[in-house]
Length: 260
Image (cartoon, rainbow, N blue to C red; front, top):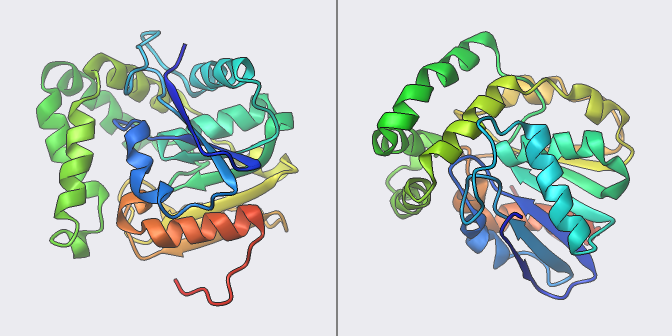
C-alpha cells in the first residue's frame, strides 16, 4: 500500500500527486498558502518516498490503480486531484479510469501530450545511468528544471529538490521512467471529462513543451489555463501565486485583486 499523509479538516479534499524523483515533502511551501477549506491528501507514488517499487515498469495506469486503492481504503470520494509533472500523467490515467471520483483535475506543470520520439529516446538512454550512476543523473538534471533566469535566487530550492531526488530509490525511478516512455497522449480525456480542468504551466519549463500544450488544449468552457513566469517547479518557485490560483479556481473564492 502506498504511503500517504492527510492534513487539515477542510470540507473539500485535495489529493496531491508529486512528480518524478519527488515525494510528499515537496508540497511544504504550497501548503502554507492553500486554503483551510482543503483537507490535503498527499501520496508517495510507487518507488518514491516511503512507497515501495512494485513492478519493473511503473505505468501511469498501474500507479493510478495504486492511488485508487489508497483512496478507496480511506473512503475518499468526490475530490480534487492535482498532479505535478509525472503526477499529472498519473492523474490523467486516473481520470480516464475513474472519472466519477473527480470534482476537478489540475495539471500542475504537466502535460496531456505524449513524449515525442526524441524525448522517448532520451529517456531510454537514461536507463543505464539511473541504474549505475543515479547521483550523477540527479545532479545533472535537477537544476535544469528551474527558471534559468533565477538560478541564484532559487539556489536553496534547487538544493532541496536535489536532496529529495537523491533520497529516491534508483530502481523505483527507473521503473517510472520506463512507464513514462509508454504513456499515450491523453487529449481525449480533456475533451470528454465533465469535471473542471485547471492547467498551471511555466513559461521557462524545460520538461514540458508549454506552448505546444497550451495551443493544443481543447476549446471547452470547463478548461482554464495559467502560464507563470517560472520553470517546472511552481510549488517551489511561485508557491503563493500557485496556491492563490488553486484556491480561487477550485473553491471559487475569487480574490479582489489577482496579479500574475
